[in-house]
Amino acid sequence: MVAMMNLAVVGAEEEIRYSGDAVVVLAGIPGAGKSTLLRRLYPEGEDHGGVRVFDSERLRAQWMRVLGPVPYSYWRPLLHLTYYVQVLKAMHSGPMVIHDCATRPWVRRVLGWRARRAGLPLHLILIDVPGEVARDGQWSRGRVVRTSSMETHCRRWPQLLALATQDPGQVIPGARSAIVLSRRQASRLQAITFR
Image (cartoon, rainbow, N blue to C red; front, side, top):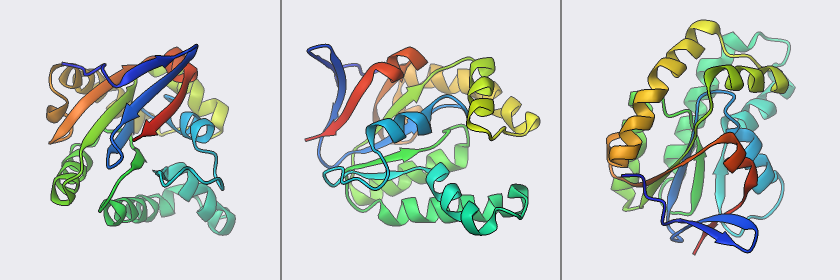
């Protein structure tokens, strides 16, 4: 069952609330709007009250300054490895928000394992958009995922969503809740708070 009790409407603003030690995985296929949401809620360079935000797009932007002339396909595997090492190393305490497509089973298992080892409650926020909308999002950000890779993400997503609505722990082992947002709902979200 999708746990909606964490979604609160405060005045005209929407807010999702978690405990102060929570790990939140913000999931969606490439182009769904995960980075856009994180940039809006957690602008880079600002203090977020102890909330640590992990977004592979931010790491990619840092590396691009040095590796820009080298085709991304050459250094993409090293970037992903570095990103996940940073995430796992930091997952000793909350609160934290992790950007991930969640369509890679091995990543979901590792995130669940690490959260359990650290004794941290893990929750999911899934941004659900159709593949063609996500593809438009990729074009607008100027980085398009390979067609074969995008097809894999889109093929896995509906099953992942169905699992999340039945039992979030089937998506990431140990996950306690899942909230599914449309692109419109994500654009109206004003805060993810940890108390």
